[in-house]
Length: 283
Image (cartoon, rainbow, N blue to C red; front, side, top):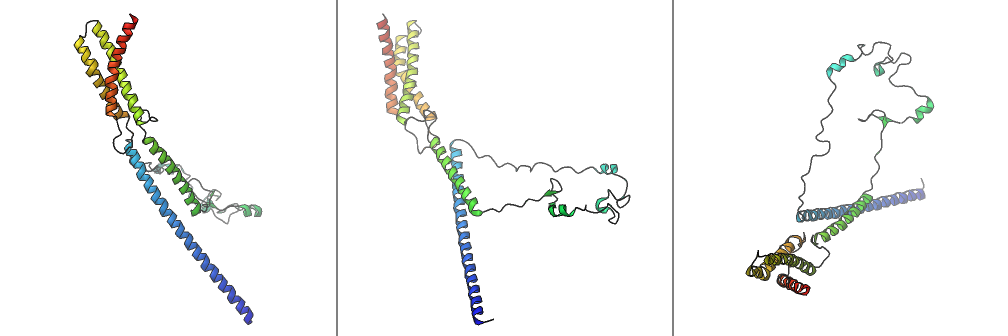
């Protein structure tokens, strides 16, 4: 070997070594990136789990206990009873004509062998088979190669989708069950006005009862000026506290007590005055 050939071989080996080192460094960097991505994804999934637990506790749904894995409680198939062995042929293995003995048959006899012989063309097309629990003679399937980068990207997309649905759930959880699209002030006005209108109907009932002599004038005035407005006010207060409070909210939502007091204590006497004006106008 000449010096030039030796130098060329040395350069080739040096280039191969540098390429191997560069490939090893690239592979190590890729593995570090994969480990960092896995750790970050694990942190995201853990935070999502905690947030889902908080949402479940806020809406009154407890996490169900983990159940047994599927198939864990199923009993294995019972073995065949020993008495069934008596129905087998009484010819012992290795005797007879050897055609039904399978592997136990004598290989030297014509037409008998451990495995059937295939023609040359079919032998080249024969596939290796493996015995499986589902059935013998099924070709084994090779597991597809899994790309960690693709799997991490799919997991990241699913985590993003879970974050989007979680944000939607939080927005819905911050809305009350009663008039969810209304503002708190408009909701309070509607609730107090509704309770005052219901109390106004009761005022009409009391007026009719007073007309037939079932209720005297003092009792009627007490209910109109104080009793029914107070009932309407506390009814609106309780309704706002029960159905006007979001499932997830920081602190206590406002119930606008002065506004509710004013609405109820003005609406009920106003309903009585409107009834009097209506009666006088009809006369």
